[in-house]
Length: 136
Ligand SMILES: [Zn+2]
Ligand SMILES: [Zn+2]
Image 1: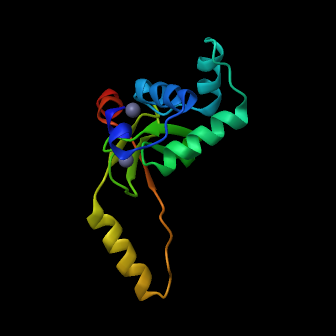
Image 2: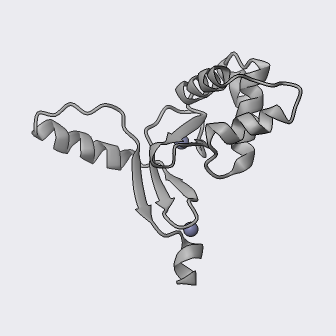
Image 3: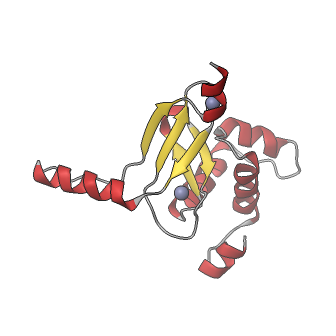
């Protein structure tokens, strides 16, 4: 929250509330779970409002979207724009974030060599987290 004030972000009450919900979850949370959470409170929100708020929070680099899970995750390194890599556990669906610019650099170089101009893309890498792999 202090971060947002420092960046001069315009956090409306609903954006702030959604950010809290996403950050509190510590794991990917779907838009409908966010809506359900909001419905418990006075601040009921319509789906478009929630999507717009999530859009804003993603642009601000506070929240990431995990496409393969269709869910949102609070950024672990907010405060700088970045395209992250995510380790997605296929069993418990927990996600760990890697933020390594070297990976993006290699990708950019390799793509350029093929004349392909890449757009900012998050990588989602499937596997088993340490808890799940120790259980098998
Ligand atoms: Zn991040
Ligand atoms: Zn796991």
